[in-house]
Image 1: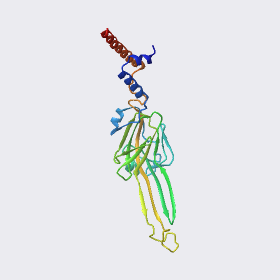
Image 2 (image 1 turned 180 degrees about the vertical axis):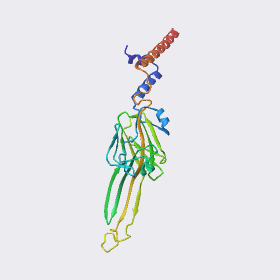
Image 3 (image 1 turned 30 degrees about the vertical axis):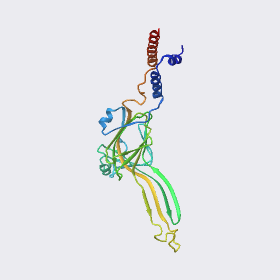
Image 4 (image 1 turned 90 degrees about the vertical axis):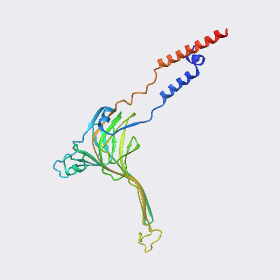
Length: 279
């Protein structure tokens, strides 16, 4: 007799529902979930196979009193991790700048980024546009654990970062960021603090110099965006202690068949007792 026929004939409805539910659980792909840590010791305990980037090779000009090495908008690659897009400096740990921008742990990577989407009107003419230059960190495949020391220099009540294009709010005064994920982390972006603005000086003076102050004398605009200035050090990456490749506990096929067999035997015994009681 086929398994499907056996199920239809002998297995109680509850067992069929449970079996279908197990199949549904196995088929649904889990959503990304992040676990955040407030200190490095806790992060290390929840992670494995960690590599660390200490940025000690970034500051190369020991004769520079100010203590910075210019990298501009070039990409810095360390141990397979790319730090790109933003304006970057390598700050010497014991230099003039290093005392201010440093984290007390030697050389650091300093990044300055910005973005804006804006529209303006000047002298009856309209302009609009957008630009974005924020620090983007591109990670090796299968990275599921990230931590770094952090110092924010942006003004605002919140510092925003995107992790795999999901935006998270961080306290701007924190000095450590650490988290693990149940799926691979491919990128982090330092957005920074919101920087929205607007102004309106329409009709206040003869902007287009035609001798008349009228509706063509416009000088107004608005924009939305972010500013980010921050230093980071000891960038650590690896895997969550429980690998993202480890699936949730689901019964093996043999176990499911065993469940079906037990249900069938139970249902068969119950049917046999009913037939005997009728006789």
